[in-house]
Image 1 (cartoon, helix red, strand yellow):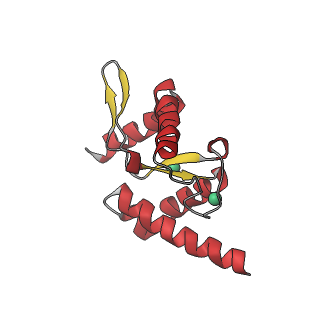
Image 2 (tube, protein in one colour):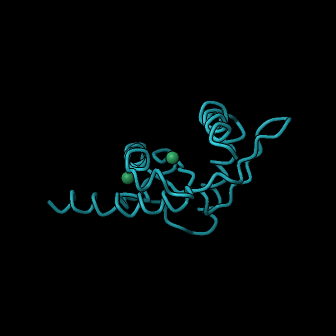
Image 3 (cartoon, protein in one colour):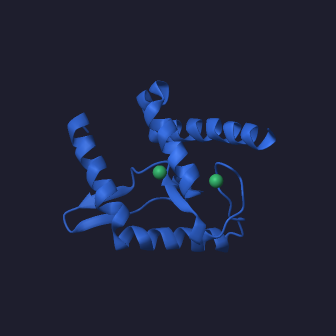
Length: 129
Ligand SMILES: [Zn+2]
Ligand SMILES: [Zn+2]
């Protein structure tokens, strides 16, 4: 995908997909699946347990979000999504967008995972002081 097309895709991903009923359904299904697997729900950045209503889902990979002729198709795998507090989610995006190394990374999964690891360290330090 060219950079121009990628940017255009990124814009409609944010303004259309993340506001669509298809995404809301996918999000609900993610929380249901997590419950079914018996995984305790907690923010992936600060580690605090939280109910679904207090968590957003970050896409560590959106290759399986497809914009088809008839509309969006959400084929994210369970592992493509991680739960975060809105504030922690915001911090994560700022890290990814502002850090030159992270911004240049080829895959969003790598950038997300590295940013998450850094954010966890930061939040642990803050909590300890
Ligand atoms: Zn958090
Ligand atoms: Zn996100």
